[in-house]
Image (cartoon, rainbow, N blue to C red; front, side):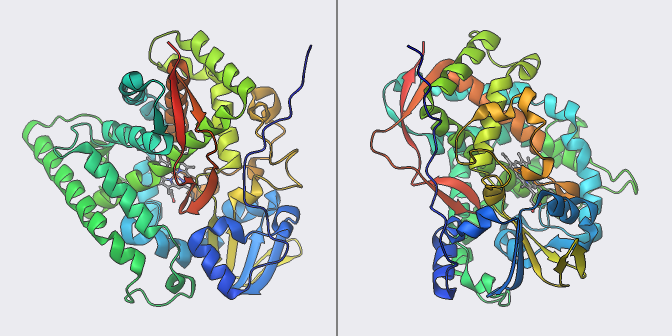
Length: 460
Ligand code: HEM
């Protein structure tokens, strides 16, 4: 008999009926900002109001988002809250720079993420994915923390693409430093919410300091070694480090300063590591709860890959794999929240945005908005198949942002996630440990709180 099963609706904090008061808000921002959203945010396209942060306009209207991020992007800048939370670690790399400094860096870095260059990283990504499943061979039927495993594989990819020569130190030590660093920075500090001066010590930053220092030392060592190699031989692996050292602004011919090279290495690791790991963790979790979708990705991987590693030509054929990743990033966008400050007064139709006020766009809310999606809380990867994708408004789906500040690593990340996911499902099945309750937690990125314990079952 043919039975139609209901789609899986994964766990998410229930939206509040009414907005939190100040104390509640601060506690929620520290513990899990996802719990601050109210029913109204998921039902109304724009909500403007005065709060502890002054005037805030919460925008989830695709046309208004396009206006803010694209058409009138010059009237906005990343706001201080976002910069304060990120900048202590990322320096003035591309993610946090503003104005002319940002424009020059973006022009200089664009060729590093051009399609041909990103395609040249397929073998490195495939090797990292193969190494992961090889490590799993002796762990059949054991429990893995899949969140940790994904963090490892994305770090391995970064090591193979950013600095091929590898680290002399224990590679896991860098992973641990990165994770500790983000954990310490993660909770939003009330001092930052109220915009208190930078010289006041923040607990998070004090805790992050050793991780930061270690990070700095490692990256400085890498740059020095590579510069010496280039000076000695004129040749070096064509990874992102060499490309950064050789990059030149197409308009001025100017290269990057040592400080900018370092800031961008740290930025690539910071921006590309947890985000991609989270996209993969959520995809594997969702597949474990949706047997039909899981069988379909497995069949696709078997048909396209057989037993061999992923190659560049396979990517356009991994259609369902890609749809699963896109749907995972819809339900659990790795960057769940973005914000901007208006540099001047702006008007979008009847909506007035005062100069200096804050505008927030939360992909997490946008992607589950009742007015923009059908069955918004259900896991339905089919939405992203080519025949349905046209129905999705470009500005209703923003895992990578949009406009001039759109994620420069978007195709790098998508390619990596597809390669790793296809390699995993070809080799193994992962099932959530019985009784484990998955909770999405917003800590800079959106991750499964408390990890993702899953039982590994090798497929062959
Ligand atoms: C699934 C993985 C990823 C997601 C979801 C993601 C998401 C985003 C988002 C939403 C933004 C825009 C933020 C804003 O406008 O406020 C952004 C910017 C950025 N991302 Fe990603 N990212 C990912 C992977 C990567 C990777 C792999 C790299 C580099 C190797 C990277 C580097 C950057 C940089 C440098 C920016 C700043 C761009 C600029 O301001 O010009 N990201 N990312």
